[in-house]
Image (tube, rainbow, N blue to C red; front, side, top):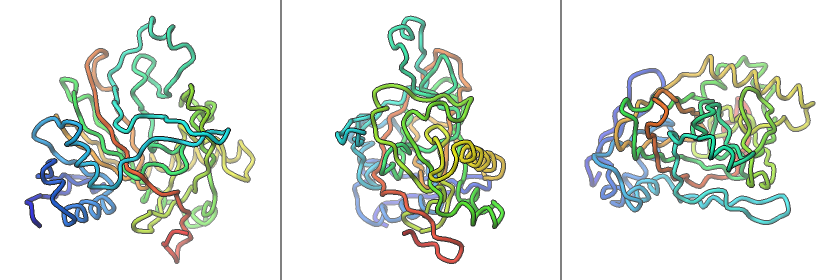
Length: 312
């Protein structure tokens, strides 16, 4: 390898990997590093690329592009048009405090989440971009500013293990089922709150509940109760009961990884393999600011069954 990088598995049964030596200068050196890191991500699902200093936009883009083409967040609307639902580089302000004045100004606008004061915190397990036809394959999140205590961990669930630990009959039952997802799911799974606002104009999308990984073909549960409304072809209440059961099973049975942030970390995760959630374990008013890039992904494909792991 033309540059010296080091990959070290982090403690625990999850298998997340710490990566040392991948700076923006190293990121542009060639295909060998790109292949190594993409393979590591497909295997481990979460990588932490330690950085010696905060990155500028060009530096973060260089690292993000190791994992694929940066997504331009434009979706299709119900009337056949297009709608930009984010900038390419997103500023994730998890420490943003919603004052009474701002609340009155924003009116009914809601970003979801359960923290009434800090709407940028998402403290329920979910997967990014699931309300779009081609959800982001990978999320790249860079810590720009952290609270004094780090701000609490970002948690991950291994949804591959969540699928494998279902009993065989249920695995067979859910193969081929698809969940309807939309930006505002109308409070389908309380106490989760729905997002509201102009992005409700985006078209509803349907994704397989058991997804074949686009690189390995292996299966994983692919659900997001912040966006799901129902299961295609199933009575609404029955579908919601099943989705709730699958989510509860994942939170009880899947291995977890708690990423405890250090200054300047670049955390990379595979949205086809994991769910994640933030933590609000820091005082109101302290900053917790990130930059985020999402990497283009394909239309999710159904896993075919126990004897064939390839996607459709």
